Length: 196
Image 1 (cartoon, rainbow, N blue to C red):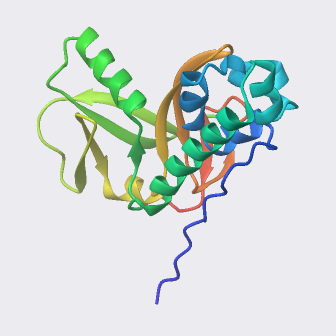
Image 2 (tube, rainbow, N blue to C red):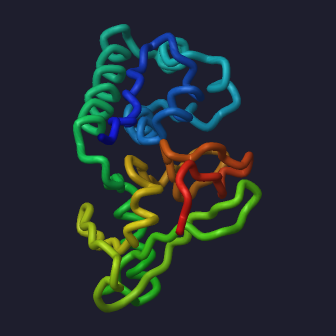
């Protein structure tokens, strides 16, 4: 009998540090940015909580509560979704934009976990034509077709792939609950499972 090892998602509060919220839930950055809180990437976010940051931007208690509710609602929907990979709207849109720029609009995104990086494993994204290879599954998210092999999908079960923009830079973010450790650069991880 297999035990359910899925982690319960920790809801945010207005007393949590902004950096802690983004670290736990990268998808919250998009909500904060859309509400005018551009401090998600600034140095103050490490010690400033959500309430302090929002008040510094002139927001009322009601607006702060609405932000917290919106983020927690999205987290609740994520928790109730299947254990498969989640690709955010913003992440899918950025992949589709890159495909178009490279003249590969009819391609699919292949996601792989490959050896490398400081922590042992890297996420590899590539654009491919045709059908999924044997032992690959097809996932469609926000108009983006994704191919991933079954073994890598197990290692990415419950992961969220997003495109994040902040003052420190921009790029694709993989929030993987199965990663045992993550490199300081954020580009590689060590996985709990074994890739056979």
